[in-house]
Image 1 (cartoon, rainbow, N blue to C red):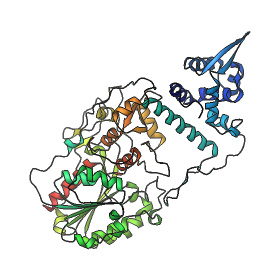
Image 2 (image 1 turned 90 degrees about the vertical axis):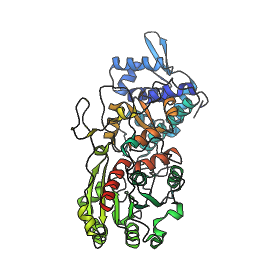
Image 3 (image 1 turned 30 degrees about the vertical axis):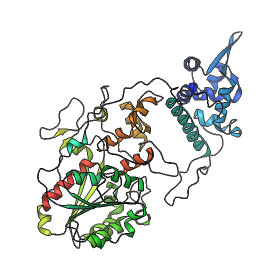
Amino acid sequence: MANTNDLDGVVPLAEALSDPTRRGILTVLAREGYAYPGSLAALLGVRATALSHHLRALRRAGLVVAIKEGRWQRQELSSPDLRAALRDLADDQEVEGLFLHGLTGQRATVQPQHAPSRIPSTHPHHQPRDLTREQRDAFRRTATLSRLAKNAALAGKGPAPVHPVNTPRYQPERLMHSPVATHGLRSLSLFSGGGGLDLGFERAGYEHVASYELLQDAANTLTKAHPEWQVYGGDAGDVNNVRWSQWKGKVDVLHGGPPCQPFSNAGRQKGVLDPRDGWPAYLRAVRAVRPLAFVAENVPALVSKKFTDYVEQLITGPLGRDYTIYQLLLRGEDFGVPQKRRRVVWVGFRRKRDAARFIPPTPTHAWVEPGQSAPADLRHTMGVREALGLPDIGFDCLSPTIRSTLTGPRHTTSILNSTAAQRTFAKLQVWPNGVAADREHARAFVAANKHFRLSVPDVALLQGFPQDWPFQGATYMQLGQIGNAVPPPIAYSVALSVAATLA
C-alpha cells in the first residue's frame, strides 16, 4: 500500500471507508481523479444536501479538497499518495468496475461467480466459504485497513483513547467457593481445552488426576494455571491413542466435552461423518476406566431431532448399559454468567443407589432487565456493561454466545457469531471485532465508531473465567480456548451436584 509510513491518516481513512456514501465518494475520486457534486449525487443515488454533509466530513478529515471552478467546486482527493493507497486496496484491473460496485454496494452488472481464497490451507477440517471475488476483495480491504489502523495506534499515531482502562465488577471466582469439607473424589479430564470443566471441578474440591488435550497451547494454559497438574498435550494428549486402562480404579469422575463442531451450525453438522467426532473415544475411555460417574457436555444442537438417532445409538444407548444417565440443559445466566450460553450435559452413575440420590444443579442467579429485581431466592446476573465495569448508558443485556475463533486457515480475533450478535454489541456500544491481547492495547486501539474495544481478559470474564486465568498462545488461540470452553460456574455447579451424590 502506498505511503504506509504515514500512519496519521490511516484511522480517518478507515472511518471514512466504513460509511457507504463516503466509501463511494472516495471510490469515484480514486477512479476518475476528480468529480463534481452533481455527478457524484446522481451516481451514488443520494440527495444533494446529504452529499454536501459527507463531503464536508471528508474535507475535515483531510481526505478530500474542493477546488473552485467558477460556479462549481471540483472535488479531488487530498494527495496523489491517498489516491494510490485507495487504488492499492483493489487490484488495478478491478478499479473500473469491481472496486466501485464493491465499495458503494451497487449491484454488479455481471453474474457474480465464486472465487477461490488466496490463503492456502491443507487443514482437513477447513471448509472455504463460497464468496465472490468482489466479496473476498472487500474482506481484504477491511483487513488491510484494520491492520494499518492497529499499527498506527500501537505507534502512538492513532486517535487519543476515549475509554479508561476498565475495572470489572464481575468476579467469577467468587461464585465458585471451595467446599468446607474435602470429599476426596478424583477427576480425569478429556478434551480439556482451556480448562472450563477442569477449573469448575477443581473449585468444587476434586483431586485432579490428569488432563488430555490435543492443542498444545491449551495444554500449556492448564500447566501455567496449575503447574502441579498432570497435563498431556499435543500428540500425548490425543485421546484416540491413550491406553485408558491405566486409570482404572484411580478415577471417581471422568468428564469432558467432545468437539462440538460435528453438531454445531458453524461446523456444518456432519455428525458421524465428521472426522472430529470425539464421542467414540469418550465412550472407549468410560468403558475402560469405569468411573463411578461421568459428565459429558456439548452444544444443544446435539439433542435436536436431527441427531436423535446419533444420541441413542452412539451415546446414551452404549453408556446406558452400565450407567443410569440424566440429560440436563443448562443456561449460563442461571449460574451468574453474563452471556446467553446453552449447554447440554449428560451425567451418568454406575451405581443405581447413587443415581437415585442425584439432584441436578438448580439456578443460583437470574437475569432480569435493568431496573427490575431478581427473584428473592436468586442473585442478580450482570449484563455485559455492568460485568465489565463500563459506565451506565441506559442499556445493558447479556452477551450473545461467544464463538470459537479457531476457524479456517486465517484465524480471527472476532467473537461474533451472527449479524444479530453484531447488532446487540452495537447497542451495548462494545466493539467485539479485533479483540486486543490486554486492556492497555484495547484502550490504545480506538474503534472506528469509538465503542469500547474488548480484550482477552474481558472475553474470559464474559465466559465465566477469572480474568487472571493464564490463557497461552496467540490472541486468536486464547480466544478459541475461551469460546470452546464450558463456563466454569456451570461446570462448578454440576461438579457440586455429582459430589453431593457420591460423597
